[in-house]
Image 1 (cartoon, rainbow, N blue to C red):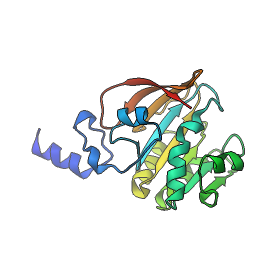
Image 2: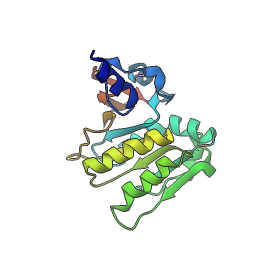
Image 3: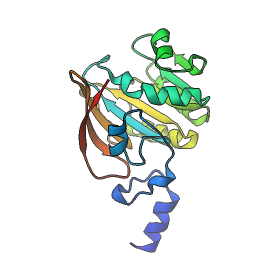
Length: 203
């Protein structure tokens, strides 16, 4: 590889390098599902990353996929933030799943534009472990700013997207579909891997 190109790649953590990425450079939090950790580069949800989770409809079980990681991060003293959630978080259920409720924040917004703005500020703060967003639209500039903010704060930013939405700039992209035992997952893109994977998570 050309030395100048190699120097550029080393200096820019946000460049997706396929199979040549250094997994050890990324902090991760275990997903709580060994079969998923096996196919995620680094062995868990990558912190410092923007992730897209494509869902067929709100409430298909997508939050259960993240609950173990949310619980671990909250117990480690990091905030879990929900920005403009479609439903009010159910505190008894989250407590039962092991979340430290004092670390949970729900942010309501006045306009759609407040969603990425709020997320960026929170991600950059360094106090958040995971920020969940349900945006109706984001442009490429906003996606890039969210990715950089997640890297700055070493947090996982999760975009839940409905059919017709797609953000190819996200470093991790997963499609989910409910199944009788849990969720079928399609790993569309993962920074550090060129392999697409399909698996079923059982709850």
